[in-house]
Length: 220
Image (cartoon, rainbow, N blue to C red; front, top):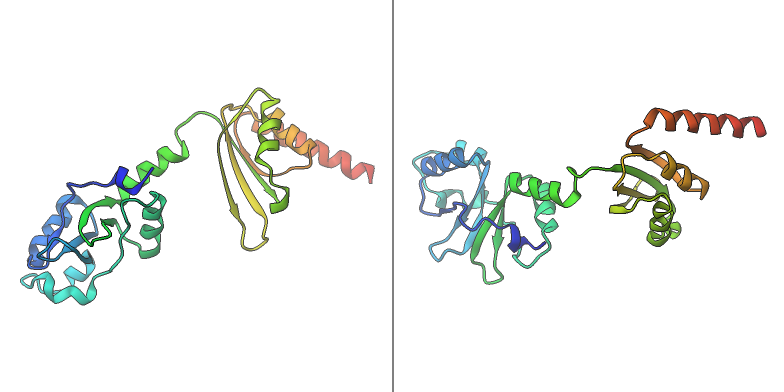
């Protein structure tokens, strides 16, 4: 999914000649804390925040606040997660989408972006989540997929990240089944370290894990 796929082309923006009082009303109408500003040629001039407008004279125009504007945007051909990165990095409620020529093509609101990420992550889909930790060199999607499929399940989504404090690879796996007991047991049998899991039969799994820990302790 590209930025262009989620761009709201009809989302309002303001010209540099717009009065601050008008822009504040626009922000209230669309329930945002930021809005894109354009020059007379409809080129992107910057992103202005509501707080900066409130601190200024409402009879002034945006020309006087050019030094306050944030100059950040994403290209329409970028992957849509670039908009997420910009939202977090600059703490903005609107991400401007600007062509390589400088023309403002639209905006992406944080609300719309959150909904897209929710769909992307499959948060509303049925199933369970298993979180593993491992050395990077031990990660094998093929093996994980094979082990999970031996329990009549399959991976619907897999995300990985490197934990800064330990250097471990953290793999979050979503599967299409709610029951995770057999899958967790299979992964543990192949020496995978389970950090968390979320699904049905949670109490039974914890009981089994505690039993295994006890047996390991008694065998020392």
